[in-house]
Length: 452
Image (cartoon, rainbow, N blue to C red):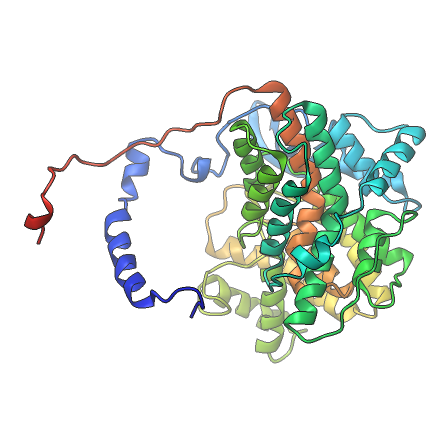
């Protein structure tokens, strides 16, 4: 029970009233032509804007017909495969990709060095901010802690009300720079005050990349291997942006269109991302895989694992939602390119960490789940592994706490949010205001004394 209010009994009654009055006949959505979730019956999103930031390809035209194809993800016209291949494991890509998404072009060596220096310069928090804000009310829900920190940072910014594009860009870059600190320090505060563990606050090092700094700030001994840092860097790059139509990016556009400030916009995006249907999906994958391993007698028996996946799909096991997490995507059909790219890095890390048996089990589920889904569900565009399937496993191998999984997503995705915020500011001067069809019927007013 909450310590600042006790209305459980009343709320139970109010909830019953809400359920009675708020229920809408599902048939009305079809009758009125309303696309639920802004998607048609085939899952295709309603066109609500134009962007030059990124693109997702899941279908292609063949002989005048639209057919599923291997997924592709493009950043400013560049295939993410090429961006990652260009790094060749010799340098880190987060900073370069961030420059690309924000500025629109790949940087020269000089531009990249200058931009990296800017990010380094901005990796600083106001005096006593860690003590007065982050440690003040530690929470297991680190997305709430992160959101609170972002909103509070607005109080330290004298330019918060300045609507110029330059100021908005400066604020975005500053937030991109400090998100790893806000997330990691938020975890340490929670781990100390709630879990009773040790407290240590490591400052970011100017010579290190975003991925390297994240690992050294998180770990007690500040140590990490190059492979660990490169795998995390790849994860950040792959999660940085995704087509503009996802929930949190659309939230960014909507709140930006109202004229709100950068801190409020990013806080709204964080609130959207934290939902288990969006940024929290990889946590469900980890929980599901652990559950399956504990439920089957022999995790190498494909028939037994397949049978248990069928039970999950039939709502007879795990969380009884009927979902095999990490499978399928709202847009991709044959493959999620992020999962394809990521899998090779996952295998390298699993071998280095002596986790090959774990990797083999994930690999088995990846192979069997689409078969089970195809047998039991009508699939119009195919089912493939999405990036969430392996990302949680990677974070586990990197010894990243479960509470930080979604914040790490946010550390990457704030780059995409920033790019879309700037594009919205440059191109659109209208507030986003969709329409809702009202099915309300007029009623005659009843005086209070006559209401039974």
